[in-house]
Length: 132
Image (cartoon, rainbow, N blue to C red):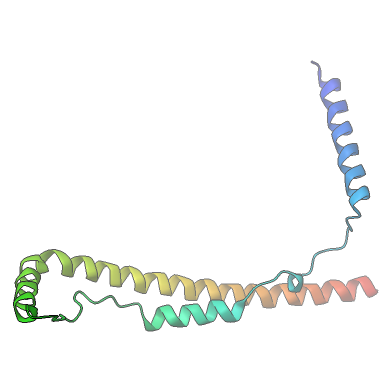
């Protein structure tokens, strides 16, 4: 194949694309940022929840149940003492990871709001330019 054949194929493909665009009735208007759905309130609400609940407890309260409740409680206390060296560092790492994730999400939300304001300003400017 030579270069001319490849160019003809590209032109044919572009013609097909243009035809499809015309058939489907796509407009050449710019999509406005406000047309894109986004639940900012829900995002903010979820970040708030994560912020309030980022900490993971190394241990939960010991529950006693039934006739062997006291014995089970003693067993659980002994087991906790035996695995403390393993569980506590994992929980500390998880809590630190949760804090960092919340910080990243807060930064993302702030950046997103900043970008939304800039895009809205640019859209307003574009509307003014189209009027002229």
